[in-house]
Image (cartoon, rainbow, N blue to C red; front, side, top):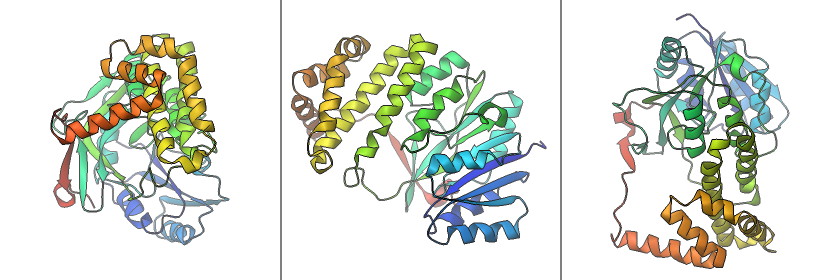
Amino acid sequence: MNETVSVIVPIYKVEKYIHRCIDSILTQSYRKLEVILVDDGSPDRCGEIADQYAEKDPRVKALHKENGGLSDARNFGMKHVTGEFTTFVDSDDWLEPQAIDHMLHHILAFKADVIQSAFYYAHKEHLLFDQRYYSKNGDLLIYDNEKLMYELVKNETVKNFAWGKLYRTELIRDLEFEKGVLFEDVFWAHNVMHRVKTFIVLNEPLYNYYQRDDSIVANYTTRNLDIIKGLKVRHEFLEKEHSSLTQESYKQLLKNLFIHYNLLLLNRKVDKQREHRKEIKEYIRQNYSNFKQATENDQQLNFQLRLFYRSPYLNVAYLVSRKVTRKLKVFSKPAGLEKISREGAGAT
């Protein structure tokens, strides 16, 4: 293998984590890298640290720009990519030592357009591996475009995240991330996957997705509703380009509408006039027949829909009751996340 892999790392206010991230890239077993560090106007020492890495290692490019957000930083970095393959690493995350080597080997062997590895949810003291969808001893999963788009919409095995994947650069060079939004990957991923002929899922966990202690409930703002906007944009795209997936798209949209309605209930201070809750409620009512049809084969979600249609508080009460009964072990819990020590996983 002699291909250059470009690694884009957007950097903003991560002085605490940046060395772990960059060191994990520069110590990869695969050496032919182009590491593009994009200082997005960070007010701490991140820009200076990026320059220090560039001075020490000729593979590193340190770029500086005014603050424009994660999407703008990724777009800026893409303009400087020269490698045949590109991957994104968020600056508080890190890679396993063989990550790029293993992904590049398989993408070349199967002449694929994109490969995604499994990953760890990385906490301070331990890692969590999602054994519901991945098996560390499992085979490769290879998808054609139709199957891939379905899996992307489900967001279980194939994730919407831009990170944790290796892309042929020519596939994504002209696809910019939506600027000024949270959950920018949801706006972007379907446009990429629509172009893919062969997609590989590598069950081996090669990416560490760092979990900060921030609580989504405590830190919730109306900007979190950007994911709803992204799912609506994706739904319109699917209706035009992949109409067979509209039912599954409605299901995923409905699940997120429920989640964010309940989060707004828990954070009434960010929605004092109930404007956003009213908008969600009205959207569900306007599309009730479509949601009802889409959830016919999902008994629980269909039941929640009917409860919500009568009153959103009935759905909340139902979810609370399920939580209580789980604690009482009335319902058995599905297989979930495997807890692993950081040393046992070989993480840095």
